Image (cartoon, rainbow, N blue to C red; front, side):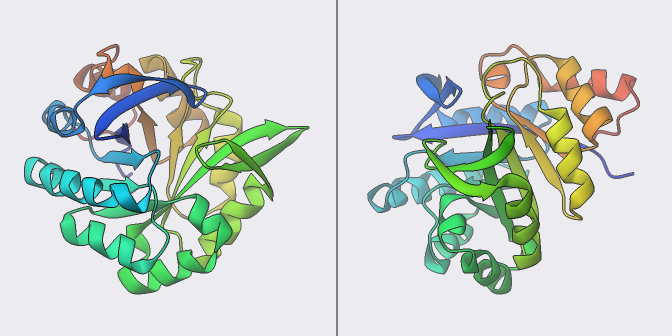
Length: 251
């Protein structure tokens, strides 16, 4: 059985790591390059960096950060935010990123998924999906969760897989930052529908939540931010707990 992955996520704004609750009330959580190095030393399997207010003016800042992170890290990392065309992805991959994550741009132009997969290979393309429960349905949201679409989450993820997405990063906005646990029922449902890896995001508050999402939803990876940034969960302790629960992890 493949090892389950533990992935710290660093939301980056103006060159700093930030974290909020339900996508709002952001507060500073440190320097992203320093945090990345610490997580690599602790035993993180991968990292995800999301430029949460990405614009073309800031793209140069992100490329400089990617180069700095690539010099520090010996584990794979994904960059997302503001990628709207092949050239954006190419610049980040050339700077040292291992994968790119797309979200809003893919909804507006689904062809982008196929274009990126053809240009770089499916393993480079992570589709990030921000989902929220609205009137009994799971609906895709854009722009950092500020804009609801008419896309049902399950349908969009299936379409993205067909277009060539290599991995799904699924964030439950209802659970994000609450530390009340992952949305195991939705994650499990979607995991049964698709044949590509799924990364669970939104709601991690304890080591038990990680155990639960791997056991109940059988996801490939679990991602968290604040519990790692503020030292509430240490990755070596988390992996030891998962191992005790017979969940395969890389120590």
